[in-house]
Amino acid sequence: MSRSGWCLCVVLVLLAGCAPLSTRRIEQADRIVALSVDRTLDCRAADHCAASSPFLAQADAAIAASKPGHPRNTVTLLGIGQNALVARINLIRAARRSIDIQTYIWAKDDAGLLVLDELVKAARRGVRVRILADQLGSLNDPVLLSRLARASANLEIRLYNPTFDSARNNFAEYTASVLCCFHKFNQRMHNKLFLVDGKVGIVGGRNYANDYFDWDPQMDFLDRDVIVAGPAGMQMTKSFEIFWNNPRSTPITHLKDVNAEILAHPDDAEPWSEPRFDDPQRVAKVRAEAGDRAWLQANLLGHSLNVGLVDFFYDLPSKSEAVHGPDSRELTSDLMRMIAGAQHEIVLQTPYLVLTHRAGGIFRALQKKHPPVQVIVSTDSLASTDALPVYALSYKHHKKFLVDYGFQIHELMPHPADAPAMLADYERLSGFGSETSSPHHGGRAPIETGQPGPRISLHAKSLVVDRSIVMVGSHNFDPRSANYNTESGVIIDDPAFAMQVRAAILRDAAPRNAWLVAPRRPTPVIGDVSQAIGDVSRRLPIFDLWPFGYATDYQLKPGCRPLPPGDPDFLECWEPVGDFPEVNLSLTAIIARFVTAFGAGIQGIL
Image (cartoon, rainbow, N blue to C red):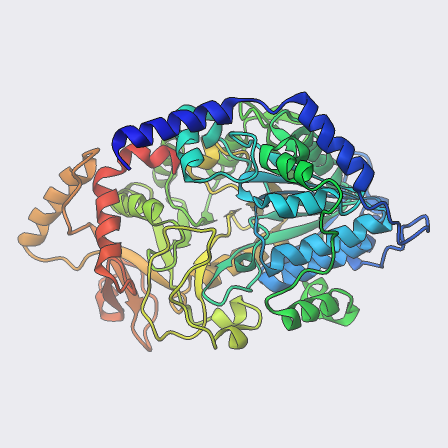
């Protein structure tokens, strides 16, 4: 198609997309749904035939033990993806009144469909179920949404911030939304909240797709959630209601493509039934574990902790202010205060190591303390990341991170030695190849073939300060999380819980699982000249083309101790493995270097 043809196409899409759906069509769809929705109630009991759950029992005990000004909560860390899925299924079955879910991605794969099926069953028991998902990456099948609209009178779904009031956008609409409505399109709801009966919540980084629950044979995310049982659920309820009632949250009958599907099939919509799973055996296993008290005790309850205050934070949809507990504050300021208050150590885990200027200033100040605050960073390598452009800009600033901020950077290997402990059913997954990627994530770097098991990509977002205060949530500590997306998470001041999270991050950063980023092996004279040219190149907003960076990746030699980069014997125990180890296609490295050279202007929105 010619350039003029593309321009005409975009104009037509803009005209069609900006035309509002008529009130008459919305009323027609609502009437059809009201007449055809499944009003079956599988239970008439007051508790809606809820199953017992140890997590709801924890919540009841914590609420009973709480006193004014002295709340008690129980927290359970969810490190393994499949275990996090089992916990959700257990809680769905135990719900007596309500289930509220807020998420960024909801895929139509086994994990996404399993949770949907369990939610429909809960709704048919009489539980009020509400799902709020960001439109960009969630439930974008109008046929599926039409079925869900009529699956149960107790189930309601809304999509957040649809640019053209549609569940699905084609390429032309996607392009037009960027051109015409970038400010609106660019602000996404990145919050992750799973809340049952207003007293047990799951908060963290996981979305609803196979690769967040160890079910993708090619690539799975290493992520982190926390179950919070107790009075902190009241803050979570307030947050959900704010988003649910915001004008950006659009009922699915108001979406043009879903509305058209409902109007086209007023009487013959396919009723909701058990989904056809790609791996029904795996689904059956998780469903059985969700009802197995011994399994829950061995895999989850054994490391539950009783803590005091759990402070749930969340951005407001406007992103102009945030609410942190009872006070109105800016979210990023809360996190920055945590970092600025550090006295000895910060352990930070983020998949996307691209910091704001504000954060950089705080880390510089921490390095001027006597002694400097130790900063350990666990992040993705190019071989493990799901976002190549973001890694490229992180790579550009390695010298600033190491020298000015004092970071100790550990980049996750795509096949870490502890992979069997990181993923459930790892041995089963090892029978599959690892050369392709899941459909809803782009920019993944190809890696060396022949490695066992799926590739692992870091997605967890956590912060531990001075081994006592911890944050687990959806905030990536990057410009997008600070300025555009809405985020949520918990801050807990409890040394025992902080040590749990710290130990998990340090395992991910251990030499057997991650490469160490450190200065290159010095070369007399030539090395000094190269570094001088590199310093100038890095300061350029564009044309940062010098191929010899200040730092490179190192792997620990067998039998050696992990000496720090400043140790005189460092190079005796660490072997340089290149800037982009295990990236086996030169094109990937070329793209990374291209973004490093020319992408500085888009750093703030990546």
